[in-house]
Amino acid sequence: MKLIDSFGPNPRVVRMFLAEKGLTLPSEEVNLLGGENRQEGYLSRNPGGQLPALELDNGTVIAETAVICEYIEELHPTPVLIGSTAAERAEARMWQRRVELNITEHMYNGFRFAEGYELFKNRVHCIPGAASELKATAQEWLAKLDGLIAGRDFIAGSSPRFVDITLYCCMDFAQGVGQAINPELKNISAWFKRMDARPSAASSLHPAWEQIKMRG
Image 1: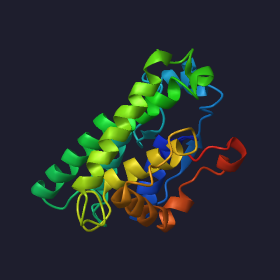
Image 2: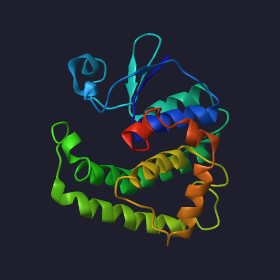
Image 3: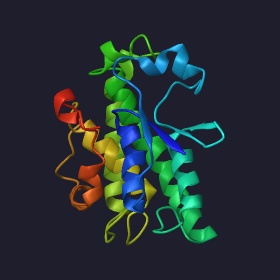
């Protein structure tokens, strides 16, 4: 099994997930910033063109960050990062959907359509006029989440889950590209500091992040 890796917040999610599991996988680097993932060599393996991906021993390539992490959890169920029972997994997936649909996807597209426009304009359908509203929608939901996690150390309970990793990597990236964390969101700010202090947060950063000047 091999991780097809690159710079970026989504590849970092998988690296952080693996670090929390105490796992190390062989990896292959793809130059996302140079557009290698949009060339035929990579597209023939992953038609979606996104990163990261996971290549199994039989040559099958699994894409989609959430699917990769779910697969790893099935193979290595401890420590638990999604859930150890059907009820726990359902609750974790519920929070995952809420965060992805209402926060992270809006933050990423807000970046792609504005600060990242020159990089993405020939790769995905960009809507520059939507950027500010997408960013605002993400902030509205972060404010809502701030109230929902009152009294909790982590989003889905007392220990970190996949949803925490997903949101943390997105917000850590976004705060450096025009989407700062609102200091008025006290619960979110405290949660972010807890996640940022985990050893996996530092170890999952791409080696070139300082040179690129983005945290991914």
